[in-house]
Image 1: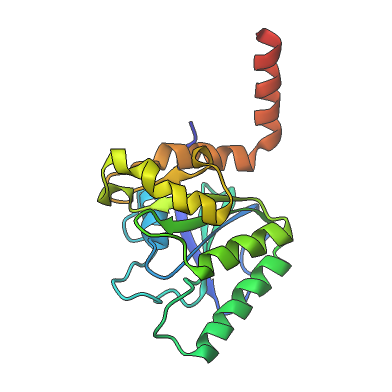
Image 2: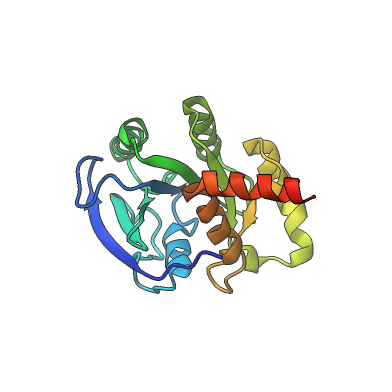
Length: 209
């Protein structure tokens, strides 16, 4: 299984453009404000202060880029849907994210974070629709799953799957508190970065059967 052996903060950008090391594969992280993007990055990398976390929603207002294992970039996009931000600021964030999606030639996949305790918001659905229209592969990650019992998770996933048009087995339940889903997420990253290898492995398994 893949492991994150090195993680470094690279740069914060007010709009997507050139940065040191650009050209490596990218995986982006999106989600509404306070859904736990920074906490997920910190848990994933086992670096508690790599991505700045805040109790105040809407703190991430820039495109934050991290270099993992010196082989790919994890791109943390601004949280959307924060009610206390004025329309001008919201429009600025939207333009920033749209600029990223339209101009990043290295983007392979997007992790879409939603809070498992709540139904997806209209902003979540709009992001989902946009990615589908753009043909950008994505995985839904249901965060904060430690806040509910294991038995309640499937029930909570039902409205999320309906709203975002995915199947329950396609959603990764994740907790930055107890590490639930971390190994599954690492496996997913490994598949994203080396799809050819995974296809070869699948073919080998079929032949052996």
